[in-house]
Length: 499
Image (cartoon, rainbow, N blue to C red; front, side, top):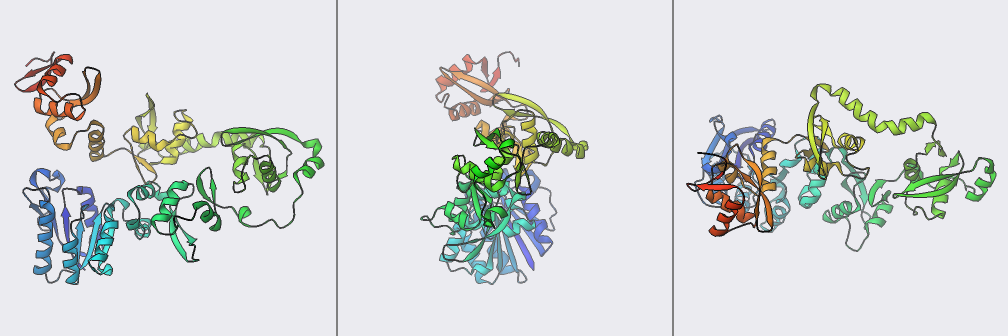
């Protein structure tokens, strides 16, 4: 199909644009790519492109001028290009409904490529306007263009941003499963084993599978899922199938094996319990013992307690671990990490991560899995067994995408810095390359702001205002004097710096 691409460059990064153009270019013939933005808001990567394919439009001024220009360009293309079959709009705005209807009325196929947040509203509004749903396809550019992302695309328009974000972060773990609704209808949903009950409940309700009156716990039981520590897992075969024969009671087993009975401690939910135990105890009896002692509930898997208590399951029976098995359990975590770094020795670099108020130096490989990253943090005693490695990555300015950890790109670093400092891109550009964070004090208030020698008094005042440190000229002057700064020619300098 002959395709014309239209890009709202004020809210879409160049990397996304080029990735989308490359993807659709493998399936269709792209005749032109129109890039619309105000001159001062245009990313440098959009400059000096091949004029035979790319056309950059300056929309000059106005808050929504890019949207208006883009709509005009789309209408002009539909009228002036008789061979045009596919209109591709790359934007995170939702102001294109009129032009979508216009294109659909002219029998054009439309692709809306956005960040997914506006998809739910677009779908509802298109239905209200009577736009043929077969003419429009919605694509979330954050989800990528691989096979898994294509499978997820039918569900994304109905999901909220938080639910979408969860599945983006667990891309490698997602599987599609079949579940039964209350009316008996079978449908498919994305699932991540170990996902929290809250996320699973939210997903089911957004996909209109679980009604508000029905509990997620009963839904899980009816669909061969189980809830353990408020997380959802698949039931094991032993849990699904009923026992073939009636097993003996716990007391009879312990009496029959009295010579081998010993006291052991088992762990569940961070608590230790003392119970009688004999090597070779059937898992069914172990479960019955745990439930009789009120250690676990009816739906909790006894194998989880056995695993946490370093017991070994063989052929449906429990045993104390041998010395080799104990060593293997204790070293498995460390071995996995060491094996990973041996395989990626050429790509290892040293980085610093922050947790609490401390900074730690670690080996790191760009793209390492979040699981390995977590094992590394736990092996170095940086976080506890229940600690969240994703939180450490976030505080250390690392990026987590699809269950993997990456060093941040320049754009991500700039965004992180802007979020932490409360500074927009315009102010960062004015500060220059020598910007650093300093602490300023006024009365009993202290705040961190970005600072560069020679920054304008106007920008300095704006930063103080945003941090609620100062606003009036007299207060700004007092802040300057109290923090070893000086004003010269409406610019701020450190006192020790001479001009």
